[in-house]
Length: 302
Image (cartoon, rainbow, N blue to C red; front, side):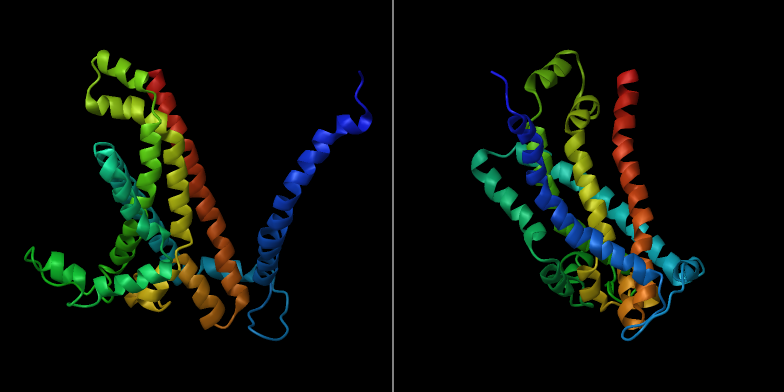
């Protein structure tokens, strides 16, 4: 029996109506603000009133702005440090959780995920107690008992960026450990047993078997963490009041965009700083997306 024309066309129309809400929300809440931000970056600085078209002047000014390049450097160091430490600790925690009994594994996973589920502003306020002067918890519980001099984490330029990194690591380590734990539990047991029978050691099995098997989850964790690092605002704003700290030691790109837009008195230059984050972020994401694939190709070639 031949199908009618309407029956043959139903799958395509059904797919259209299923995807339509996504594209509507994408247009309203992503493409429209992005287009408005691009237009603002091409106009003169103004908070209220009329503005004039200045073209790419704000972007040319950024190339000669030393504070902007300081923010780029701080954001890069912050992202690389946070990603390296967090992923390493998350892998260690995930392996440790696998060794726990099922009875205590669930409560431990939930406890590790709590920082990632809390609002960043609440976590930043809690970390004020951790970093606050000589009486901060970090100085009283770790630095002083080890015999070191107390550190002013929020005023010393040598440690300001470290404080932001510690806050981000504490927030996301347990959250990402949960995803990595799921990936470790999903590994095919027969592949691990075959590698063990072939005489592969613990480290060899981890590098040549485990990492390729969990590479999709690991890539997701890396991308998620990098995006959060470039979007970091609430934590550093609560700790430093949007100033970037002493000598701009904790100045990040998002913080600098806020300063340009709301403190410097111009939405145009603030929008330019915000949009300038896109190529830096895209470059890191492309590198992260391509690196694991290249590593697995090299391992298979060997």
